[in-house]
Image 1 (cartoon, rainbow, N blue to C red):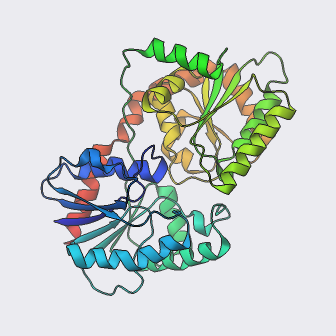
Image 2 (image 1 turned 30 degrees about the vertical axis):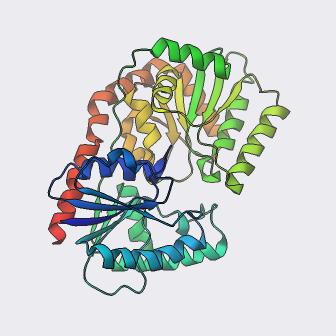
Length: 386
């Protein structure tokens, strides 16, 4: 079975969709029944480390453009049909919900569309130019109707698809996995270096994620500032994530820095960039609790990563978080600072309760999110289409 696999988001320091695409590909290539042609962006791929697999072909494209730009749309409507003609795949797996060729009418290959979220259709489409967003809506709608199999990463996203496209009947949910954090031999040394590098002087509340406006980091910062006005709550706030050059992201970071400066929080709030695997594990393990109050997500991987190391979690109510984290987290209204502060206080006053829930989740919740299971489910989806 030959699979044409969209690997364009698999880049160094990949997060979100790119991280998921990479972990899934690692599982799929273990199936000797599959021959996978992974097309990726020229010169910035993370895939060469997988080159030893004989059933994997890496096809570098010229698509080095802004991933949200019009040039990407042009690429998808011209280059992908050419790749189909070149490789004659049985399955075209589009790993980010987009890319179904608009003028492609053949019944081969079968198209599998993975939908992570419906951001372009919601009020959280902040990273797209209005014209680009309109074009994405048209192409996404076409893809939803053209796909032979639609896969979502949560029931929450599946319900979103059904809300916007009520005629779509068959949606399969395949949950993402999470990496198992392994014990680190030089844990104490790395932790000591992190403390010195980022001036971590006391217990801290931790955020790891992106900086798009929907991630709600600024409201988290405002809530934290209200919390520590009561002198009995002496915690730092560590804000970690990849600093990109996107204009909206830069605006968010500027707003955060201005707020920190104007409220004299330079010693309390630490802005930390991208974390490697060991650094993430250590900071998650050492955190008092993990705060992730995003306004909209399709899955919510960081919440599960925190729980997997026994760290209590405060996250968003009425969202996908309640689906994936179940009873093992504390939930706040993410658009309400008063409620967020109240739940922070609740977390600290009843800390042993939420610490115990996090530890319980390591055995009762986390094992249900694993990449091997996700890979097997996709393999069966591919097989059943042929």
